[in-house]
Length: 94
Image (cartoon, rainbow, N blue to C red):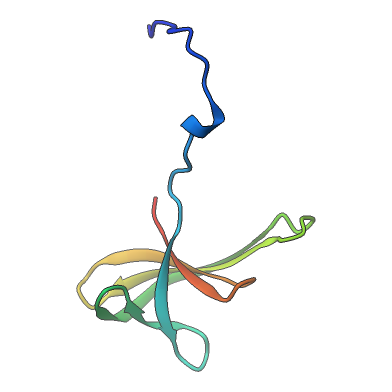
């Protein structure tokens, strides 16, 4: 069992985890990701999956994202999403 230290926990002691990382992606004419520019240029050779999440529609800024599970030319797999509200790309880190 963990001993209670009786210390008060402050809100600033908490930090978000798995925060998406902004990235630069080139798209084809259909809007699909084709090239990742993250320090160096890497072609996207395969899209495994694509799905959309629309959530919290009742808020002033609802969540609307288009996710892609990708394979880069290096063989690296990653998940990225396009924020449809801001037209910005992010890498989703788990």
